[in-house]
Length: 116
Image (tube, rainbow, N blue to C red):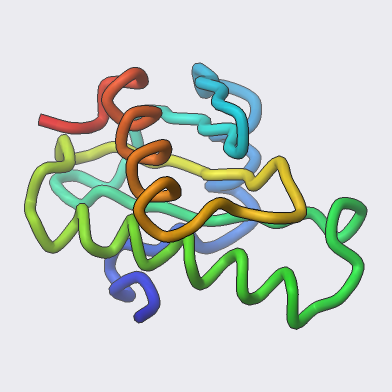
């Protein structure tokens, strides 16, 4: 399942702001940039998989979908701090299995302070 529409980052302006002002957090497979967004009470996320890292679009989409699903579950659980904007960049061609992926992403989100 994709991220809910109200929780998606859109537009070049939002991405540029996050990449210039955000504080980064790094794990083995992910790079997370978090900043306070102008989005009020809505937290917004984006998942980035660089084409230089993964050449095939189908492989990029698979990585993006798997990562987005974990983020969507966290949003549905209402455990995200309101009003933040975050970009999750995938740093590897192969992600671990679903349980390890979720554990790593949740621990990175806790480390960066976006979970309640």
